[in-house]
Image (cartoon, rainbow, N blue to C red):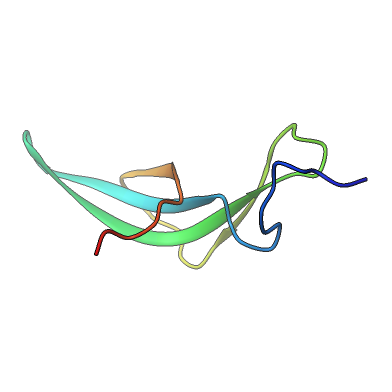
Length: 67
């Protein structure tokens, strides 16, 4: 079964970040891993390179870097 919507199934679709609030108006984002959609489209496989002890984990869609 193939998914025609997936351009490169080996590339992650999301990046995982640890987000720590520094002040009311500022936060620190640290990349900690990646996520790929499951084949059945009902969830994600997440690979973390680090596990945060505080803050929160935010998943963001992978976007091309601006030049």
